[in-house]
Each structure stands twice: as structure tokens, then as C-alpha cells.
Image 1 (cartoon, one colour):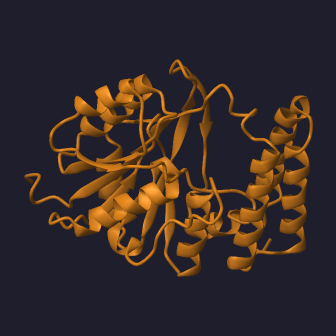
Image 2 (cartoon, one colour):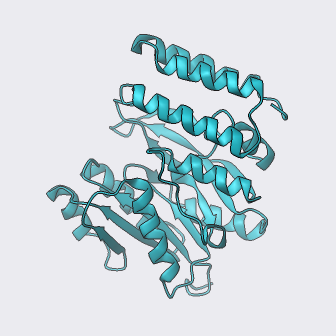
Length: 285
């Protein structure tokens, strides 16, 4: 099958001044080197970027669609800008895949997801598990997500059960809906809530289709403001999906307490919460 006969896939990525140029280069190259040749990269430049980042952009394939915003708008608005251009394209993309500017796709990511979506037309949003790597590219862990829709739905009450940069959407599921931007850094979690509330079907593949880069300041960045924002997002999702049971509400406040604890307690607290949220998650929790 020629590339023109295959379902077309738009990969949506945003880059901003805080991104690392070397990581961004690897990320973009991993998209362009997919073994699925009907893959097209849409890159949104979210405001002014460094010379190093600009050099990487200038070296990209001419077929990459680059969309530049004059001012930094934040990830949600940058992604919405990209989505609007994708929907205006003459290519009629059947699928839209997300990607972040510091992660790395495995070569067969897009082909694997397209094959699954083609064989399972009821699935509207498809993610996967992924490996975690450090700034040097060394493996440091895994992000294992629930695979089945019902479990994904129920677990949203306690944590974001989709790895955002692994997700592929059926394009029609994103028409007339944008990434919510009323709560910073929660755009993906809030979008999952809106799509689930509209009855869209979710699934996660068990394969690691992405190398997710976790920065050294992963824990230090999760300060008081971010903890409160995440608590607001979790509370909103619980209400939006009718999952605001006493147990789920208690879990939300436990998470907030851990996040507001001294740094030396945070890592230990995360380990306890990770076990709690899976061990005690019940179908009707």
C-alpha cells in the first residue's frame, strides 16, 4: 500500500524557549523516521525560542508544517492552534497523534497505533505505556497504564491514566473540542475528562511505544502552586465523571498532603500513593 492509500496521520508537537535543543532534535527525528510513511509533523513554535532551537527547526524536512506564535501562549493554546491548522489541511487526516519536544518515539509507534485503530473502530483515543529515561537517555523506569476503557475511566478519579505524548486520536473525536486552558499544566487531564464525559472510548496498548524523558527537577518543580492546581483538576474530573465517592475524595486530599510535605518525604509518599491507587481501586470507587 502506497503512502497515499494509507490513513494519514498528523503528529502534533509544540516547542518553546525552555526546551533543550538536543532533546528536541532527537524528538523531531524520531517522528520523521517512523516506519509509517503517511506521517506528517505539525510543529507549533510557542513564542520566541533560542538560536539553538531555531537551528534545529531550520534543519527539519521541508514537509514539516511549522506554525509560529509571536508570543508564548502556553501548551494548551499552542496545541489548539495546531489542531485548527490540521483540520484545515487538504490531507484529511484520519488520525492525530501527540508528541512532546523532549520524548522519543519508537520507530513502529505510529504504525502500531494505526493498525490497532483500524481494527478497533470503536476506540477514539489510544495511548500506550512508555519507558522513562533521564536527561542522558538512560532508562530509569516505566509508565504502565491501565489498558481497558472501564479501568481507564474509573482510575481517572485518582490520576491521569493516559500518557499524553503517546496518545493517538481519531480525528473526528477532536472536532469542535479544544484543549481546556483554564487550569495551567492540566490540559491533557481535563481533555480526557471532557472526551470520556461525551462517551468516547479509550484504550492503552501495553507496549512501550515512547521513551518519556523525566528531568532531574521532576520533584522540585512540583511545588505548592502545582499541587493545588492538580488537586483542582482531580476534583473537577471526579465531579465531571461522577466519580466523587468518599474514597476518591479522600485519596485526592492524601495526594495534596503528600505534595505539600517536605521534599524528603515526597518521593516516599509517591511510592505509597502509587500502591494505594492501584491496590484499592475498585470498579465503583
